[in-house]
Image (cartoon, rainbow, N blue to C red):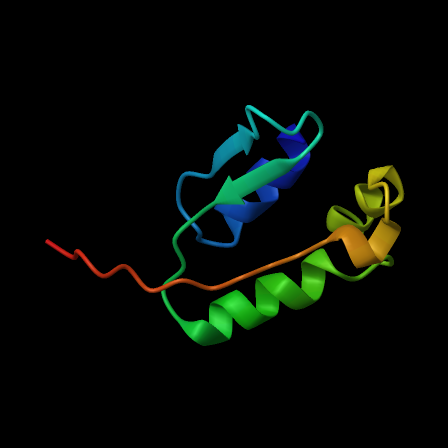
Length: 80
């Protein structure tokens, strides 16, 4: 996971926050900010690519394989 986080930061996502669900052992979530929807789409595409040299290495570790990789984009509503 350290290589994944390093790659995310190298892609310009800034600091990556990594969580495990308190009530669902083995459910992990990463949160990051991106500068545009294009950047999000690029990261999402790479995260789902089993041939990707960094992100592809984690897909076999998921219980559902590639189907277990989910990415969502959210817009912050309480911007300061």
